Amino acid sequence: MKTDKRYPRIGVGAFIVSDESKFFLAKRGPAARMEQGLWEFPGGGVEFGESPEAAIIREIQEEHGVKIKVNELVYICNEYVEEKSRHWISPVFLCEIIQGEPSILEPEACTDIGWFSIEEIKNMDLTSYSKKDLIALEKLLSRD
Image 1 (tube, rainbow, N blue to C red):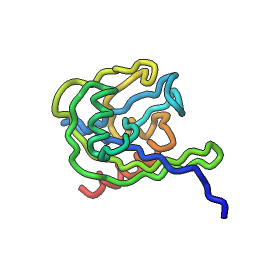
Image 2: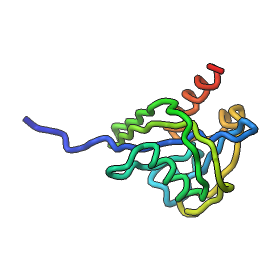
Image 3: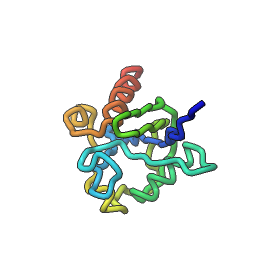
């Protein structure tokens, strides 16, 4: 029996919301692995032995210099692109900043950041997984 040696990778994502009900997004830079030049809800990879919650806290601190609080799991994004042999499974959390102001700490991986309303986000050039994230975020907001 032949077995496939490829496995999905585990990532994490964050819907970081401000007191003004705007969401933090980052624009992928030239050193990003994929989808350079597109906007995304921030996130990253889970390291071996790390919980998803710890991973998103670490990633946001490393990339944007802020400490966040994870409030709740919103959904799990399944991003599978066969032609690119890419498969990520990523829990996405609703988060808030508890210390600091976001900045760009990895300028080759991220070229811009900002806070945006849902209406503004709908008109942005988003990564493929952030398009899925936006659908989940809209469902979350419609519950309220």
